[in-house]
Image (cartoon, rainbow, N blue to C red):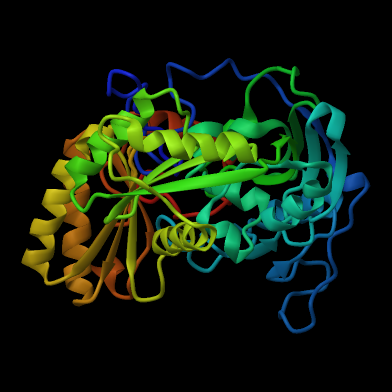
Length: 453
């Protein structure tokens, strides 16, 4: 729900889809796309797992869960959630901690369940292009394990550099520039094992790419920020590891110029894997064999609208993508907003942001996955009141343009003057229904989506 699905520029320069909100504005599963709910395969965990022993320093009574547990397997995770439900404890799932600020805060959870202990490789079938892993494995570690087979999981979220886990990435719906070609992590999931808030173990999908069955619980968990349950295991589709990449940079300090150039490359037959605007340049990335990546880099400046684009050297290429990734992640003291709109809305939103910075005394940096309409705004300087005013007013402009905004990071004090979420999405009734179905006690990540549910 948190990562946006606004559509992609196509040959006619329009969007292939409309702006589905992030968790702030629409669910992954909508009333028009939801499949009938099938009863998942489940098993009671109580027979095989034991409640972790009480931590003497936690103050918990004998037989009760401590305030923080780190299960080392599926059974222990299920047992911990069973016990938490029995005790009426609220639960916060924690991976690498890269997205704990997203949305509204979860205050004083009764149990923090760390998933970092669920980090095993379960299976790898190179000939079938599939891998099975526990959800606490960091993305970087999985890439290291796949590389000897000439394979990789084609996702490059900014938080990957900070140790983000696979389960956390799915729960956040986080994705990077290559989403243009491969989609997000949820698009690569062919099966998943979940633990529901009452400790029930549910399995969805399968181990092979052709398996399709029932309600897609993995897609439901995508962007849910841990509000519906725990992602424990994932079966994923992998891809060939590209031999080479080539990145071109086109000077484009104006959002309108960048949008026109993005349309041009998307209409061309060159098939970029990423098209991003860093506020100064349009970055266009190709990948494949050394020959094909280099050839497309040579041809791209000949595309009408791309004249003046230059191929970056290897070090400059790495630096450009690292700089963009750091901007999107943000730093302490900054406020970071992620918006999803039709791509054509970017110039007007950039203009509105400039107006707001002049009114509030806040500095703002705008970067964009411009071909998909995924925009990140980073607010710096000024005071908390200025950040809050800029956040609220720019979010209103995004909503008026048919888009949505997720608050990913906030300067201290912003929460006192600005709501974490904007207006409730049209499908909020569906979200509330799903929450009641999967977590009737409201135990998982309480308050994360307040006031929606």
